[in-house]
Length: 261
Image (cartoon, rainbow, N blue to C red; front, side, top):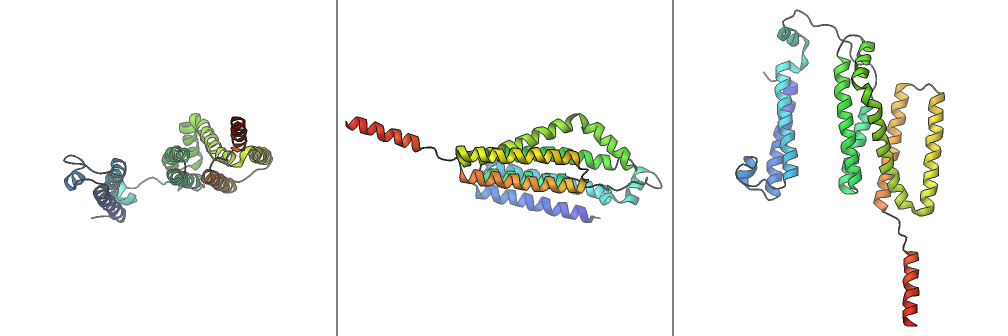
């Protein structure tokens, strides 16, 4: 019997496969090639077709998994494990910053497709890091029934790479967004914008070091900062680099006057 979760994933798989077929036909693919995944004939645009087919296969695998695990039902899992009862597990009680960070990555990818390739690459990097963090977090939260032990397990797994990875990602995000603002501001505007950003970072770091901020408040600060950073980068990328052609035009005029003389 199909579970609720399997029905959902089967529906997603069907929509993804149907979308791949329609997309392949619209982009110039042959009917037999689209249905046979390129075995006999073309499939149209390879990138979009491959993404949709991969989404369909992934959803299909998740549907089968939910049927086997019965949507994670405790009694069903105990029966399959051959035990009378399952051990008690404490549900995750802490908040996570990865939801707003994932939203930042998705927004960066969408903007990158329309505006700048740098945002697209940044979004992919952000989603990779978020996926890794979420996988380890979901596993460690259910490793034992003790939240403190689970946190120790998570830190042992990601501790050696978490801080360098997050530092590199944060630096890249700031560099990409701020660089677009600097390019659109011109010489004087870039100096002013850089001074404002440096001041905010300095006093923000001092404040965070002096005040004991709760995790929820920190998540809110991260979310607001990510939105402001992305918004500034969008505006800068949309405006484009500032034009510095006055000197060149003046030089061309002098050159033309000398030629006439």
